[in-house]
Length: 246
Image 1 (spheres, rainbow, N blue to C red):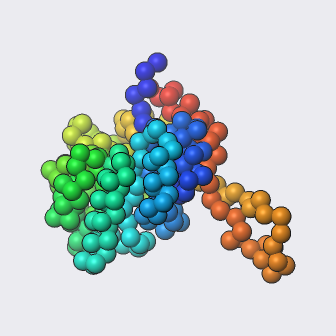
Image 2 (spheres, rainbow, N blue to C red):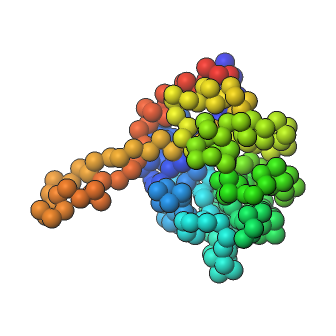
């Protein structure tokens, strides 16, 4: 059976990227700080992942958590980070810029799309904060973005499936609509059926206990001893479930 879907996994470090790739991820959105929605990983992590894995890698270009209206200085940092990803041989980048009125910042978005060409550009869930999603869809198509990551302007994609389906229908192949947020094995088949989308995004992150043999007493029960990672088998299971839809 020919694979006609893409499973993108959001990873947060080298370890989680390695596990996602081992589980069969088709593409990696490489981030730091997934608890804040994702920020740009370090040069070293991006470089090591690019050298180590033969899978498409799209680092997120985001200087901080919070909203998506940035100062000139913040944008300059992200512009340089995007160029760095191109120099490292990444396959694309993930960006998102809005004006204060929650419209797409066309100028800033287009500037990075042009600068990293021919790399692909995903517009991330800043889209879900847009005041007019159908206008934003056309703006991003005109700019030349490759795809939109969206939860349908809800907190999770299953709840936003109605809008995602509308966006995918209107896009009509001009841009990829990729559902993300809350995508799990229990809902991915119904989400695929409802939206008719062929690309899906999830982090599948889970807490991994520290393997340290000793902590001072004050730190023995500290949650900061542990970190989030990805179980490669969970990625493999999700791919197998998704394959049933196609």
